[in-house]
Length: 284
Ligand code: ZDP
Image (cartoon, rainbow, N blue to C red; front, side, top):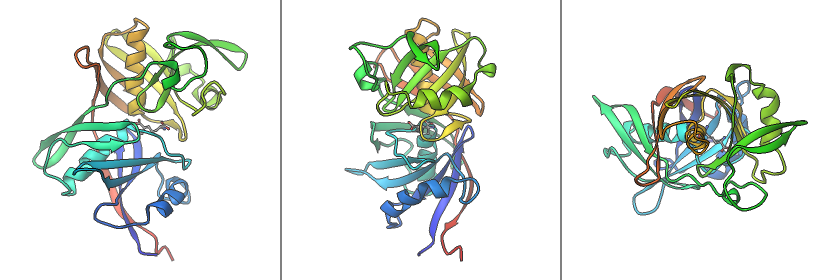
């Protein structure tokens, strides 16, 4: 098998194997079939996900992301910052903004570049989807804001937001003591969420500071989730707990999130890092 070049990248500790499928005609189907093994931290490279850098329509780019369990979600926030840094620093473009097609629709990153290095990425994540059917979540029409939900014999209040991928947000008094490992997988797979769901537990520090921990659909506990941070800010605004711009702090670091009242779009700003590179295969 021809060795496959990859670059290992991370955004706030949320880590990805990034493969350039524009300059190399790798077999995408077989790459996706290997995603779970490649993401395995014992037998593979180790990562929360695999990102394929592809050509889109009309000169755009296209991002496909595969979770570490092999499932394909619609979008990823930390991943798209890594994607944007990759296409600029690996010479696929000199532009500092471009359109990336995803299963959640077109996403637009804007790069901050210092001496040829991408130091920060601000991403237009599009409009949040708030209707229950758009999450998707079963039940009557309308939005889901601080709604009682039965989980393991207790009632928790859920606020549901889609950033193209589904999120269930729970406000708690102290996020540090939250049983994320216990409740995460149970909530992820509740039948009321037909496409499963990402789960965020959030402590409101102030109207402009939110602290969260995440159980990701198809990946488990991660150090950060960009779409999850966006969903958390939107949920906090809907629940009257925060302003439309806030710092969202995760175990892996902080993101600036702004839900614009002009175009209703959510803007996420944060870092991305390249860690190492190598090749897959010919591991005799
Ligand atoms: O929706 C999902 O299944 C997520 N696990 C996708 C990955 C989300 C990501 N962590 C992010 O930053 O939004 C990459």
